Image (cartoon, rainbow, N blue to C red):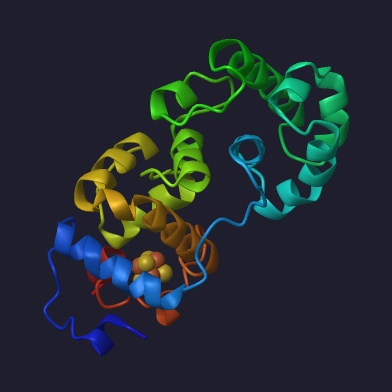
Length: 224
Ligand code: SF4
């Protein structure tokens, strides 16, 4: 389905709230299955899986987390772990040495500063080793159902191509997207843009011909 099918012959102005709503409507129809691909069953597991997912596919993370969670079932167990043992379990994941160190350090901080419970607010999450803005946003939404709009390189690229924003870095994109997308849709928007970036609007060869956003995409309109 394209924008023509749902009566968008009068294109909303790019970068506006109306434009963002139209984009999300189209993506929602295209990707009804959009959502987390990481496997987790509580905030602790969501945090660990999300830290592991940086610059690695979700599938790779899902391959190592069953063994990791079996050996370290909670924050306390991970806080007491030897990072070298964690490395051994996650070594098929990119950047595994620094991730192992971050996981253990994050668990230690949660134990000492947050009574062993993964904090459910943005600033506290951001204070944990290995947790940047993207991870904090993703954990907020995926683990706690709170508004969070994680922006990685996919979301940054896709949002700028479409015309949702004109920004130079993921932080600027996060700020702008949060202005034009209602808070209750932040998490959904993250997943929809990720799906679109993976399945259609890829970095090297975007599949514009088959794209549901073809008629309203800024990238395509500039080429007209
Ligand atoms: S038309 Fe092309 S550049 Fe625009 S969102 Fe679709 S795939 Fe990406």
